[in-house]
Picture (tube, rainbow, N blue to C red):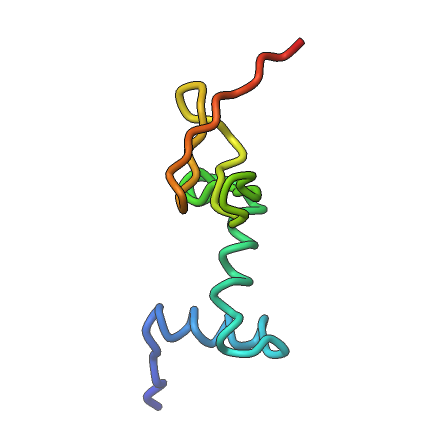
Length: 85
């Protein structure tokens, strides 16, 4: 009797389909990204959290400062961090 073997990627796709059966296909990427971000690890460092920019109004201003200041990724406006009192 010859059993049919499936590839590792096909097994992963089937597992994702079973877990996310109620989620539409176009929303699955977002759901998986948010799950990885919540779990932490390397992926959460690659995708920072953003807040609304007071200058342009888009949600493209990083919450965490880099080198003491933040820059909006939409309007390129710099915002220095406030000193903690």
